[in-house]
Length: 583
Image (cartoon, rainbow, N blue to C red; front, side, top):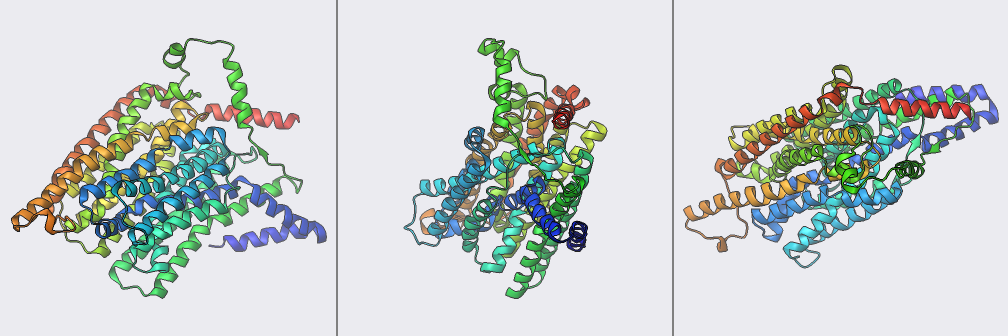
């Protein structure tokens, strides 16, 4: 970690060459360049995304909701469904993003996040009268929906800032989201101890605070100074730091399982996690310093992208020929990779296949994540092990996102390996994780947490990259949110209608064998391997069907992925360079 020392020497050297007042002017201009630059914007994006994964912590505090409010598993799964519904109904944030700047999205997301989770915390700690079930569902839906505003604002803006490395960018950003649960788990252990109710309070204020602090930092920045190859090298530096962070958290998680940590030890591990989380800042400063050097200390103008004007000009070009609505939507579609309209994309066969894939893949993954706490309980694992499951799932969720971003990008560019085929392989891997829960053995839930976390994490970056590649970036804010609509439906059917009732029936059988009925117990609990066997066999079958559906998309897009997916963006960048040189 010599990055800070190298930076200091570089900045000092530049200042000395300018001498005296000009040296102090260099410091000032560097500070302005860093704050206004797209690399600092990328660093801020990492921090916001690192706080945007609060929904993955549901497995830790769901037991508190179930116990303090006296719910059965079906009711808890219903609340879990509304969490998934809120987390995946991003159409509202997408449409708002079409007409408002990014800072507006981040402020709305911060307000929604704090309101939802704070109301849940007040309910669980009995600071409010016990809410009705529909109220808890509403609170959870509101809280989870906040991440859509953060995702939309950060993902879309960063993709437009780095369009030629979108797979890598998506993998990094969603990777930090995957680590979010493990990061916040370490912070909550250091700040609140083993009080899982206080975790709800933490995820109420911390993500909201991050969005507010960087509200004006996340914006579209048109920079043609850095070559894509140089950008990729920088992204790999970010990758190395994030891998170190993930491995450190995994090591700490294992150590906390084997050894009893004192409050000081928790504080020390949390401090180390925060240091690694902020380490990308040094790389961002270094990149902005390089830009300052390359421009020979002349004033740097960072131009904002005139997206609305560009869209307006494109709309004017389309007004010359006005086909019928039916022809425009179904017959006169652009080539794959060009900018589709919202209706053209949503009603296309390719998008329908993605709906099926998200219903099967994300629907089964959300079901597994939401039931992870009760799965561990039913198999006799202690509460401390259940926290380990959640941390392992979060860490390997990160590795899945990084894999989907960096590896799929490398395979696509080098070998023309289509991303839909990568999605097929990921869904088949997820089937194996579900079967490990259906047919458990000693320690199998640890393995299942790793497999399901990895496959779950890989699905979203692949989905977003596929949407951006097939339908263009013009309406990406709306389209990538629409592409996720199959997942809340899958979560409702598979979690609320299948898994929850099956669990409760098995729990009732246990009560009947004891000669008891439902009225004599406050909490309906099932213990044994049979509790989740049938339901997870169903999940494995559904996930396998989703993998077969994506093979159909592989066949449909074979010619497109055999070509140059990024040629359009290279041409646009060359045009901007030509325009800049002529001014």
